[in-house]
Image (cartoon, rainbow, N blue to C red; front, side, top):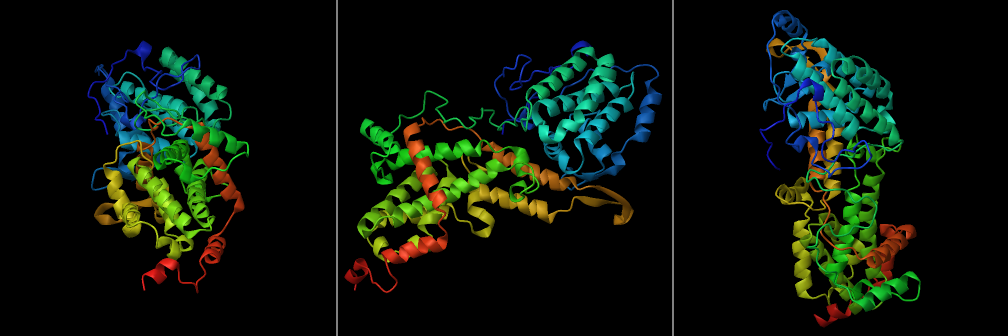
Length: 513
């Protein structure tokens, strides 16, 4: 992760904040190049030239008397573990230092889980007003309040929940903010206009991957640089894929270079993986029918399942055991290439199919699979070992450089345990460990959630691979065919036993006697 710069721009009152950061929509609706998440932006917060003024001591004394710092709970690493909402907002808009970038990200990502958008907006207005004017704290606090409002509108906004806060923010920008800082007030009003322009979109500007590279949406992925390798596919193969689309030919995975199959599967999975938005990963939303939109998470999970079923289907759809063995070897090679592309999710889907009971029991078939490919399969199984709480995968991900497609299920498991295993609130300890009876927000839970989300986003970068639309369309058709067939493991096992009945010793087994 890149380090933070120590150089921050200073601003005068007439141009308090630069409201057009990289990646934000301009007033004309165009977008500048996307940047990394706010937690990784070197100009996230601003330094201030403090000017002491006569008579400010009384105002500062009053602020000290009304602070909520005593309502904060810190852990052993001096990270905020809990606090009241006013205390957390004070930390978000602190007067004496730049707020911790991880804390800001965690708060802005998860605040809807412990307060409402309207209450949050009202609290920010109160914070702006509370420091008054002409004292040492007013400028840094008020500027940071403005920064929070700006980032909320331009980066973290969710239309389906945050609309209730707009009247509060509008009155703030048109009223006390506009009176004190006319330019800043106008910028906030412009941001509000953009929120309306975006209509029912779930977010105004989606949180970017930490690499700062753009999302491709649902369009077919194309190479992002001129360094993308030339697809390993011939004209005759492309024609066969086009004819297959018209129902005039039958293509098989065996017809294509395993590397190119792996590339196109990786592009298809990457496209889905990069559409997953942070709010879809909160509060186990993907498990709740009426929770926040989590369709991208569920679609990604379904694709992995469908890919595994496609692998099994292509093997069980062949009557001759020697040809089945060739199909197994082809999928081993595809999985090996997926591993080279750091597509762990694809590797796992293929290996799950190859080690499923329906495929693994085909003794006659496995008897003619080459030892070389059996060895490759063994190495791949070690790569995606799921035992010991995914210890092997976690170790692999630690130093992995994006782009990559991690096994999403591992992170969903982590998020589920965080959500289910931690309470929403906690008691503020008193002296000698006694409870003060004050209930505060368990912010540690939300910080843990944010760390997992941030790890997922780290890998959400596009691949420098050239799309082969014909192959992707064919793979889509094959995946759809398997998906709508809706075969259960029991169905696949029946097909397997029809190919190699339990009572039959395979030819290869008889030869080994």
